[in-house]
Image 1 (cartoon, rainbow, N blue to C red):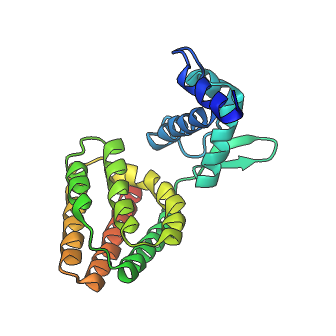
Image 2 (image 1 turned 90 degrees about the horizontal axis):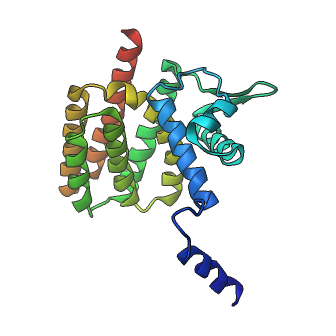
Length: 225
């Protein structure tokens, strides 16, 4: 049995009790910790106690540490020497930096990419419009924007936008707590898609930037209240 054959034999003959592959476990652990940050179980500036979190998640310290380092790279955590990981601070100044950056990059991608294959956007936006909780709304909203940029043939822009959107999701979790914000954002998505369908790419880019400007206004109001 050669090396490749051996690998596939091992995968296809795993029992139900076989440990999850390390890469999958790391990703699932990262997702689980991110969810705790988004919903406030790990609040801003909280110290992440690795021992307790390892027990809570039922994973060893190695995949947990790898997951925490990944979340640090995404901007969800900060690592302080001799003190460990802390949840990143949540403040309006960061949002004021993130939202214009995302809006500008997405608008530029639309102007240059001139996307016309828009069939998937309507279904994603319908899912977003029907969201009844924050996690669903945040996922669907992000999926809509990612699907739009994918159709712009701008892979470098998409790569830059990934971590920016991840950081912005902490703020979106705040204002998608109400149906009004979801419905208004979904309406704006429809307007963007309609402009694209009419090949009015500059208009679509302007509407896209306005979508992010509106989001920032919601964030600012949530901090002011």
